Image 1 (cartoon, helix red, strand yellow):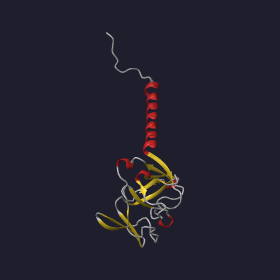
Image 2: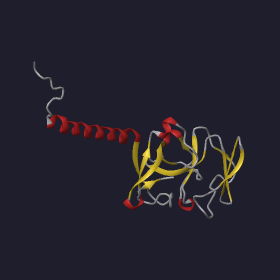
Image 3: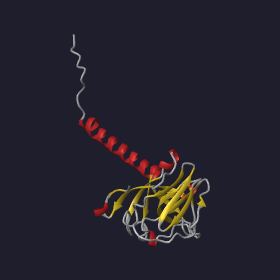
Image 4: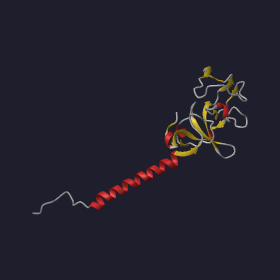
Length: 186
């Protein structure tokens, strides 16, 4: 009677090297999927979002976040311009709200009443633009402002206006360049 050996002889190439190659290919394919379908990149041009984002910084965008949910107040977003480019700003006003800027204070009026937003992103005086009186934000649109209010061209000015949801590319979530500024964006 012969002895049965349930453990086959090891074939180093098949068992080790091939498994490593398959694992590496799977990780690369997963990473490419994430980058193509869930992430994108954008370049910050100008100082309108300083100190949160500075000129020539590169950011990663979560393109999928607004497929599952709605943009929220204070999200930093990338959106398409009328000239075909992209801009980065912070959401201040939501659809259906009324907004007014008076004495460099942002007033929001909605079904919950009127409130003054604490402007933790900018201290100092800035122009109200055309929202020196209450203006209603239409459904499907967002009122955006740069963090550096004095140098930002944003929804306060009629030539920029509100941003439609269809024009939002995604939510900025991380600075990846330059190296000394790598980190999450809040």
